[in-house]
Length: 534
Ligand code: NAP
Image (cartoon, rainbow, N blue to C red; front, side):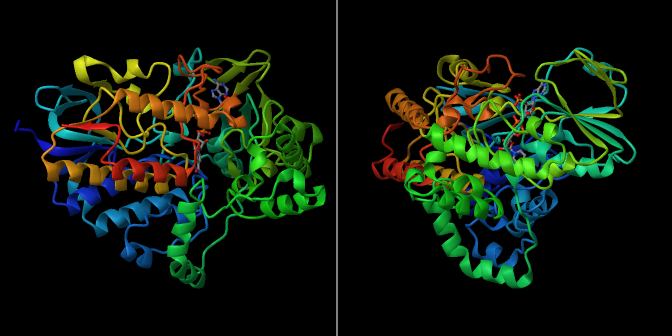
């Protein structure tokens, strides 16, 4: 056996990486987590912008694996804010002593597979080298912020940053702030920034459909009820396509009266979380007519909330229907535009041309700011892999293999890249993130155990099986209106070369959590069908 530093390296110490290291260390395996950040938490360590919180009900977001954690942890809000979620992850790490298996400030620049020894050699940005038998990536799907390249960005005299890198000590009191972008991140931070800043200017290229989060505190009594229901909650999450407690309305859209539709939509709009998206009629996602009628309903709700009718129209998307892109949930987003200190600048026809020392210029006006926030999204899914030099058999680069979009087997492995598993990579089921991450960890860990128990040294996805999976992923996009989305889900990002609209990238598995879980079980039960073990 070749000597190596570790049996397993997990890259990424967020939610998925933490659960994986828990399982591996329970098995007594020599494993370590490497994380580029200074501490654990991944997404929840980084996204500290005002208003940052889940869109998932807190109690469906937590880990399900530990009765003790479920008994001891008290979520204080239906939709937990970032600081509480980070506290939760620290609580879990401390409880199970996970930190002693985690190394921070360790950015992996390269990993190269050695065909002779079946090991990976990792190189960190400080030159340190680490060898390991297996690599499990838990890089996050939205962990590489993508800022635009606009002339003059370096010349700005004030503070400018992506919300992913929001400065801890930033005080916006009395400041003039410009926010570029109106995605889920901007939609969370705009109402909060509006309360603090002297002036807030939002630069919108395309409006996004958004609906109320309807957050609320969770009392001690309510938390007791939640604890008593945890088995049922997780069973429901496992049964529903999106991994939430929200179950689709199974009535056919066309079989119910307009009054009945309205009754459902009013209830969902005023209800919590993704109900408005996931408890809706299934036809909203597949049928143009149903989607158009529902989008008009949401448009009217927006019109009721924005005082200036012209401004309301600017905030209503016209290029896509509700739910085709990932729906941002908001708290007083639309009302923020009723404030005197907030203005919306439509840059769809007047793009931002340059950043100046004092602010920015569009094609028809100049604006002065103390702070510019680039809420311009992420190089999603493949971005974190592309940033690393990952070389598999015969020196093949993963970045090259994925040039036109990700290609995987089950979203968990890649043919030509043996002994590598992805716990939060592309083409896993699009579900409430922790539910999918637990599924990935609970499938990957037994695969490794199976290898250790049977003396296997190497696993690799078969090329045919991989192609079969990619075809299946593509087929699952087919009936959905979302295949037309100009969104990170379909691989669009105007700030990343090669990610133009129309070049569809199969980033997610749209078949739903239950179908995905069944497939994983079936593959394992059939002796890891589609995977060669040697
Ligand atoms: P996003 O949805 O990709 O939005 C990026 C925004 O920036 C879009 O409005 C985009 O406009 C705009 N933009 C990009 N480049 C621009 C440019 N050069 N000039 C002008 N505008 C530009 O990114 P995000 O808001 O960070 O959200 C990404 C995902 O993160 C969400 O969909 C969600 O899944 C996740 N997220 C989750 C939560 C939560 O759970 N609560 C919170 C925040 C984010 P176009 O639309 O025209 O491209």
